[in-house]
Amino acid sequence: MTQPRLDPWLICADDYPEDGYSSDQLEFLLGYGILAPSNHNAQPWLFRLHVSEVDVIADRRRALRIIDPADRELTLSCGSVLFNLRVAAEYFGHQCGIQILPQRDDPNLMARVHLGLKADTPAEDVVLFHAIQQRRTSRHPFQPEPLPDECLAALAGAAESEGAWLHLFTEESPRMEVADLVAEADRIQWADRHFREEMSRWIRPRSDPALDGIPVHDLGIRDWLSFAGPLLVRTFDRGDGQAARDRDIAMHSPVLAVLGTNADDCASWLAAGQALEHVLLKAQSENVTASFLSQPVEIPALRARLTEMTGRAGFAQVLLRLGCAPAVSPAPRRPLRAMVIQQSHSHG
Image 1: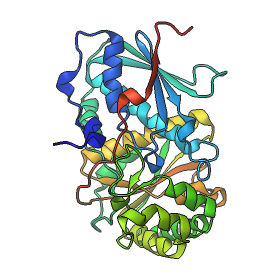
Image 2: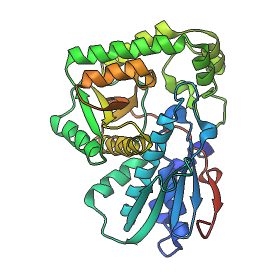
Image 3: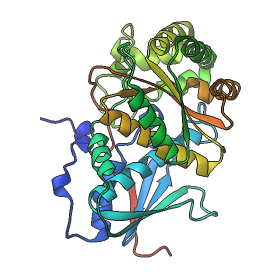
């Protein structure tokens, strides 16, 4: 018997409505879109279906006001949805047109996706498509073995193909520097009562049937009694313990990677989100696991220092660790029907 909270991960390509209306096909493709990652697994997106297009809309009710006050990471998440949509559309033999920020007077409208004419499926899309349902975020330590250079080059190429860049820290000394930055960010964030309160609202005890948020057992912190997890987060500054753990995990990951863009506006964040999902799916297809170390990118002064460490012009958008790890369960997902806000036949 399956758990309803994981049902969206079980979408089956054989059910694609090949002879259905474009709107039916788009709705099916959205089932792959919503398997994209999001901070705290907040799933901050909504969709509006048209005849042959779908609007991807930011759901700012699910924003993280403390750690993401400008909705930068929220926008990245919407970009990751876009990439999954694109790959799925092309896998099922359609051209896919994407208009980024199509209406300047509607800042919530992230993109409009048009399902185009039949087209051959690029070979890479077949590989990436099959990785969508396999992709996981692992919060556990990685094996220390280095990753092959060809794999790392492919990941950097994936980011560049979406208009972003990926800087890889593979040597021990720079990895230690970045790990220290992660620990510093942990101490700053956990000392903030508002941060702890926001975090606690997204932690799900074992008994919680919620379809979003972070299951407490995924946090890898053994001393949390699962039923008390949110209370402990809200009440105690665990900054030193979290900093020590995250520093150790970061330092012993074979690769730390900064994904960045040359500009730092909404369009760049959407591009970064597409680049991020391209990197994550490419990594998954090579049996490489990724995990987020978002903390330094969420504190402006540390974000600037992290960017400086890469030696690149631009802006760090995401900090990842990459390596090999045992399989983990997927994070829960809300059902697609909860995210489709209306269906219309024109843009009105």
